[in-house]
Amino acid sequence: MPSPPEPIKPDYDGAWIGGVMAAVRSPTPPGWLPAAAAGAMRVVVLVLDGLGWELLEHNAAHLPTLGAMEGTAITCAVPSTTSTGLTSITTGLTPAEHGLLGYRIGVDQGVLNVLRWRMDRGSKGPPAADLQPVHAFGGRPVPTVVRAEFEGTGFTDAHLAGGQLRGWQTPAVMRTHVAAALAEGSRVVYAYYDGVDKVAHAHGLSGDAFTAELADTDRLVAELLDLIPADGALLVTADHGHVAVGPEGIISTEAVGHLVRRSAGESRFRSLWARTNAQAALLEACREAYADRAWVFSREELFDDGWLGPGGPAHHRRRIGDVVLAPFADIGFSDPATPREDDMASRHGSLTSAEMLVPLLAARGRA
Image (cartoon, rainbow, N blue to C red; front, top):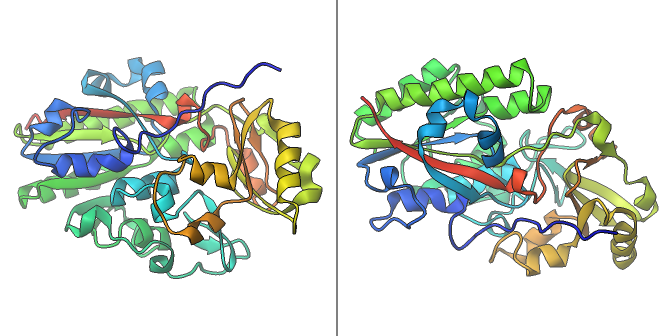
């Protein structure tokens, strides 16, 4: 069997998404922050959900504005997914520290869908502050321009607590909110747009719908640059990339099902909890069945070897399964509890470069 590729490990001490907001505020910015942002009097940080570095490179013809900005790739968090990545961006914490360790995580009441803040059986999740109590942006009053329907949701309370939320219904409203925040004298503005991620999941990473969304996203970037003053900058990053894995690439974990008590995570970062006293047997069985297609980690390896970052309380470990399957092949692992997840046209969560590398690009305003 050929050796698996090397997984991408986040640079938690350097250029990673959790360091972006601190870098913007620092009087001595790190060298990896693009110069256009490092020297700016005000900065709009725009998170483009799902726009990985390789997606940007492969679709340069549809992204001329982004392609003209200065910068390079940085690493996102593990797992390479929205709930984990956005929380690291806004709090500056590693996944081990903030504890939102994936799309679906284990909690005392069962399995929590973090984005919907619902338990698997449909009940509301626990109070957000019980799972992630740290305020966003170091407690500073940063204007936070996100979709209006996010206000008051559990995940918003968990990763944007303390932010000055300004909800948008359309990109035009987003631009209006950003312009108003700058006019009020805000030094840093945080904005979030999820079009690329939504279209990628639904339609894949090619075709008319995806290329049209890329063009619209690039137009949004250009319009934001046009409203930011010349002494300010737009800084663009993302929470993760994408891999083209459709329904045909989904496989079951039936081969080890007799050892599994419950599942969580997502298709490209599948958490498996072992039946009583079966942890070692599950790890061995998963390596036997899936090591030719996936990196197979024990919970201890993920935490102790630093994949989820340093620090964090011990009880966060229980939110990840005894074993995690992170594919390097173009596959995903199904979970009977979330059958609709199998229908997506592209995915993320694992440790490949397509998923783990995201842009950090900047340009000065043009207003």
